[in-house]
Length: 218
Image (cartoon, rainbow, N blue to C red; front, top):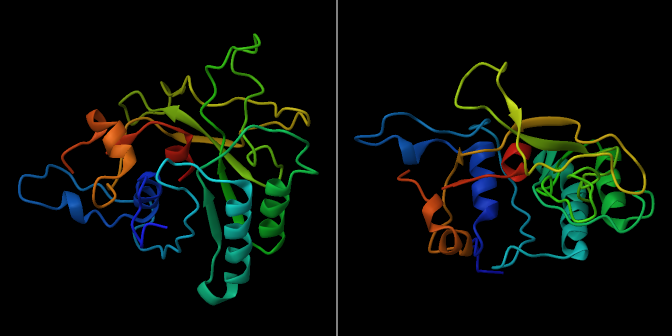
């Protein structure tokens, strides 16, 4: 939907972290160039989120299956899934997890956000056992968020308090598999006035940043 526009804004932010070319920060008065981790990567967009940043299992599964179909056409090697939902059944029965496994078996690396429920203590779990699906699947490369503390050194790095922690519910899979910076990540803003900008105007910087395992996953 949206006629090619990103109505929520999360997808554009994620895409910019992956492959942004830094053009928005190459300007008169810009003090540094901010570009994606793989600025020469080719990005294939399978939109699944609506203007509220919401989706359904069927939408995500359809997108994964379409990526598998188009793997050879576009040389698709990695799927980024900066999304997740609560675990309702074992990964062995969960259709969303099975779609992730199908992609892996087709030769595609599937990188998935761990989730942002690390502060959840609703049942006295202190954030443990809060990994989101499909990040609970052993075939997924599940990414948690850390904070770099404003330094280049890794010796003072800390896990972000919101980053979901394992083991996974029901199956007790050890997750996340890896952590990456997720705090204060600057990326490009979707055109127009997407919902993310409308709801979080204070996070828009002159060149938007967003805290979360979605940023770390990318």
